[in-house]
Length: 331
Image (cartoon, rainbow, N blue to C red; front, side):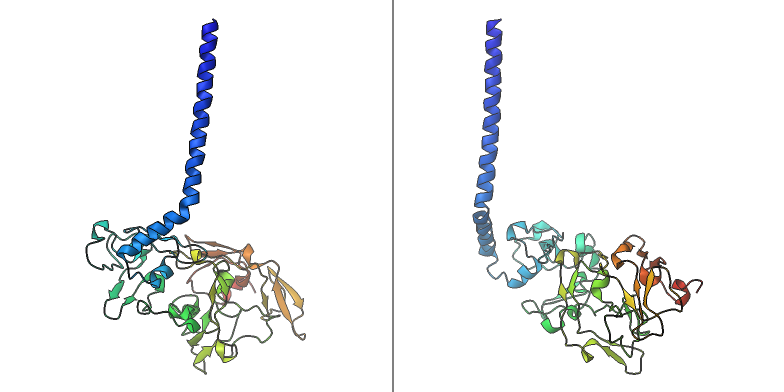
């Protein structure tokens, strides 16, 4: 009996020692890993540049993470808030056997493409001009030559119009769309008093993506003046991205502004979702939404906005043709 108890105590002691040793080893390995991470990263970056001695700053503009996260053949996007991080396979072959083959292989599209590369259907690289054409991440506009930068005075429009003119963002021919304000005039512009009329811009619906509106906007319209331009009255300032992980990431990120909308386009009576602040016909008259716009929602699968005050609560599908009775039902 005494021997049995002694054996049990020995086994318990051994078990405690093993657990202690395991915990100590784990702590030691974690300490080594994290304390030496900067040195490991620097060594790996150095070894990368041992082969790629001409690795340019353009790579860093496309991949802002430490080089140890880069992987040949990986076409995933690992964009972070502070910058883009498109992995090697976004621009180079997905076949890892083509790495270190003595050639610079640029492959912007392919039948077995995945990730963001799958969205670039007809992307090509011009080896003479050193530009990319028809690539998703630049909205199909020609890129600057490799090693050159965008025109910083027209940062947004280097890739797409602001807003894009190819869909319900803004219709060039009709002078309508999601721009400036509700029932705005494509030739005369918008109301002069922003305190009484909400100015609709990129961050109205892309609030988490855009930090600052682009006022370099210029568009041809059907109007008498032919051209509608923000910088006709405003100093031209390029837009600013708030979160790069939500920009050019393969999906539309619709996050509405936490702001109430105001409009001088008043009906004779109040409508659902709107409050009359100053009576129609009075000096400075305007209405204001009952709740901030971020109470609305967007369904990415059906491309439908719901409970949007600017459509009087009527569900609206993106690119759906909208006429007066679409929103003003029964008025």
